[in-house]
Length: 402
Image (cartoon, rainbow, N blue to C red; front, side, top):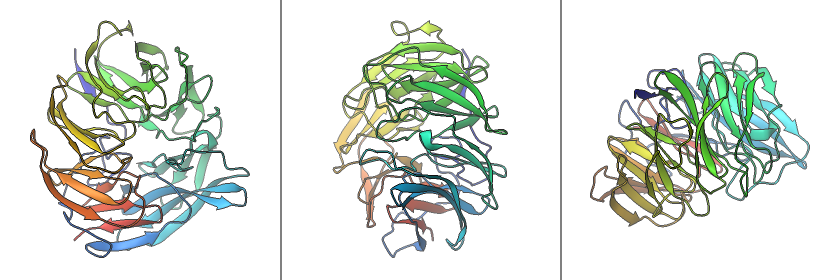
C-alpha cells in the first residue's frame, strides 16, 4: 500500500497559509523564533482585534489574516482582516456577512473559530453554518459567499475547511442529518454533499478533516458522530468507516506510517489508530491501537518522526509511539488547553487557555525547557512564519520575533 499526506494548500516559502501550517502538521520551518517572550519582551507589535474569534492567524505574502465576530445589536458582524506583517497595521477589515441574531455557542467557542485559508490571491474564510466566502487577498473584496451549508448547529461551529483538488471540504455535523460537503473553490457552489451513513446518539461535531492519498486515491478523513469515515475527494463517495461511539469530535486526524490517528469522543476521549487501505466497514479489521489515558478532546496532536505528542483539555501531556501506541511519558502541565501543540525551534510548544506557554523537549523522557506568559485568554493555535510567532489572545494579535 502506498500512501502520503496530501498537502491541502500551496506551499508559499516560509508562509503559514492555513490551520497548523503549510502541511497541516503544525511543524514550523525556517528561521528560529524567540524562546522567551512576555507582554513586552520580543513583542514586535500588538494589534487589538475587535470582537471575538478563536481562528488562528494565517500568514502569506506579507499579510496576516484573521476572522472575528463583532457584536452588532442582537446580531453579529462576521469579519475578515488583513494585517501588515511588518507593522501590525490593519490593511483591510471586511464585513463578510451580518446576521441579525447571534446563535448560541459553547463558552469555549466563538462565532469565528475556523481559520482562514490562503491560496494564491484568494483567502477563504468560514463561519460554519453562517457562511463561507472567498475574498481577494490584497483588498478583501468578496468574490463569492456560500450560505448553502445549512445545518442546525449545537454550541456553534468549529471545523476549518481543507482545500484539495479545487474543493473546500468541510464537515457539517449539526444536531440532525449530519453531512460532509465540498464547495468548489472557484465558484462557491456545492460540488457534492454526502450525508453521514451513521446516525449517532448525539450527532454534532466540530472536526477539521484531514486529506491523504492512499494507493493513488485522494481521501478525505472525517471523524463524526459514532464513527470515522473516508470520502472520495472528487465524488464524496464513502470509502470506508470505523464504528466507535462518540460525539462532539474536534481534533484534526493525524496521518502517519500508514495510519490515521484520531479522537472519536469529547466526553470520553480516546485515540484510535486505523490502518489505511481498507474498504467498507473496517472496524474489526483495521484498528491498530487505541489509547484512552490523556487523550485530547480539543487540541490536535503533533507528530515528530515516530512519536506523537498531545495534551488533554485538562492539561495532561503525553508522548506515545505513533506506530504502536506505546506510552513513553505522561505528565501534568496543569490548567486547561484548547490550542494545538506546535513543533518549533526543535521543541514542542504547549499553550494553555490563560496565556502560559510551555516548551517541552521532543524526546522519550519528559523535560520542560522553559515557560512564557502573556495576559489574556489563549484558545487559538499559534502561527509561525519567517522567524516570527503570531499569538492570538481574546483581545489582540501579537507578533513575537527578534
